Length: 399
Image 1 (cartoon, rainbow, N blue to C red):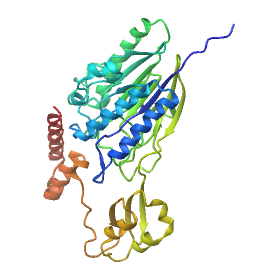
Image 2 (cartoon, one colour; image 1 turned 180 degrees about the horizontal axis):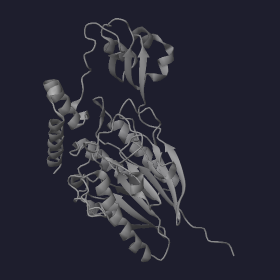
Image 3 (cartoon, rainbow, N blue to C red; image 1 turned 120 degrees about the horizontal axis):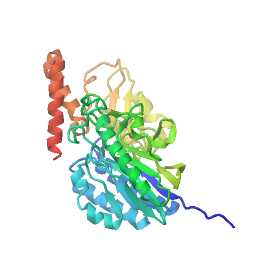
Image 4 (cartoon, rainbow, N blue to C red; image 1 turned 30 degrees about the vertical axis):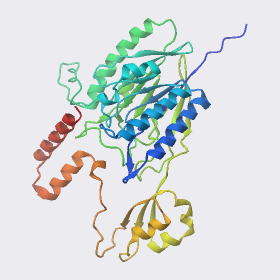
């Protein structure tokens, strides 16, 4: 008698869409729309059942109207393609705003898991197969429930490690009860937005918290068949295994993101993860940093393949050049910055490029201002007070 074939559940893991973000001030809505359209086509092509989005859906806690319209269109496309969607808020998102209407959205297959220190697994079903999902939104250590005392009764500080430990310990206990009540195997997936220690970051990720409290150990996620991570923009496995990974952002958001972009296609069977496939993202403008003399950058045919890139130019001319940005833009229409290599001197050299303050972490902006104003008079104690004040202001603004 032939054995019955067991159907695997097809899942796409993606994250860090940052809907509404700009690249050095240039809008990226067209590229983000192209990605969402492509993602919907992957759902159809691969027969995807579920799309997991591990945080930073928007780029701002107060997204612009255009960003909300774009996300709305993208989610409609994924549902029309035949998949359900699970989203969690990241540190960029306003959890309450992202979760507006979540009960109604759930009826259509869009599950927005809101911000809370209490995380419970829930059973998701498709085609007779079941998966336990533990969706952990970004937990701000200063607004999440106070960490429980340690095993010896000692105080545990407010860190992302400690609040995440507590939430996942509760989830694992509930998962045991859920599996006992289930009459078939129940693989478990955790979806989380966190900075796992030892992972490789890019320039475009803003810090999750201040003072080194944002790192977590990979061991926090023990006991799950797959851990879908968000926050870091570089696609990467964690701990040398396919069972825990960052999907990375689908588009480059800084000049450090020269790595290929992808989403992860998972085949999940009754006993756990069976196969992982990277689906390269074919849309989006790549980034490149070009270094050379102005004449070389303007005339060298080797750069013909870079004219459609986001370009950062580093000039090695011995003297300051006339209107380098305007001249380079004639060849590279998407050039975003021009600077001189170290050691070049002359009028205007050494002046920093204009910086979009909104793209910088709040604590970095405040500390840079105070360092400029006070020099070495900003004491370590004063620095700590400033960081506490910035954290409090960020929390109040997000309410």
